[in-house]
Length: 293
Image 1 (cartoon, rainbow, N blue to C red):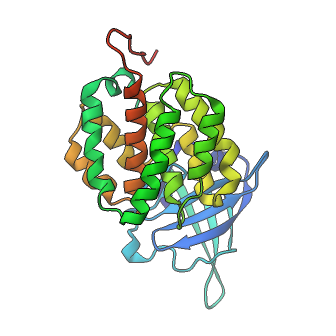
Image 2 (image 1 turned 60 degrees about the vertical axis):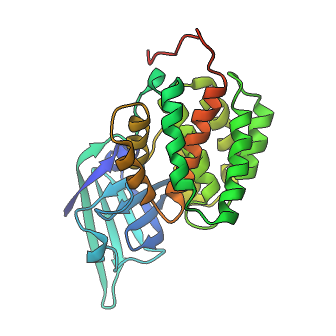
């Protein structure tokens, strides 16, 4: 039995009644599993120590260089519940079971920054995100940036029009290749920033549109977008938001986010920036800031 650090987002699966799960993707640093549930399937990820800590993750002590998941294959079964995850891996000679038990949990919820993300200073700091966006291939950056601007405009009113938000979400969801398409990462960046800012009217409008559009993207990306709708994110985005709010090293946060995935860090940055700019359009002198209460 190996010990892991688990997200509170999957604590109910780990601690609940045992149920069967199935491996749906095996990567050098992560294994994704589908868990049948009602009203729809749940997802969790078993992660190498140096993998991106997605909010549905259980993090092992081994780095990817140790090939912690080399025995596993798509279709392998697992059991989750009663305090542990047990994988039934295929090997050349027979089968091998590996058990994982959480030693502790971490909370992937975005930091509650509220009014600290309002005003001209955070907006100016947010413009530093252009450093990440600039490294994207020109064709990709143009497509994502144009749609992010449309979403920014749709979210500018204090209470956005649901049909306009849904239309812009439809242009982004599932856009791009990979495990998490860049369009989904943009949406996740916006959602988490609005959650950190306690901007409930905008967050709720966007979350409603994204939830309705989840069947249009890849299942794993949909699972991560569903977490973003709940304000849950990777530590690199949380660190960036704190730095933009004035608590933390912005350069270090940008460096950390740049290392997230192939294009995910830049696309998340584009979403964070779009959310800040949408809110800045509505900031007027003398308008009171929301509190976290």
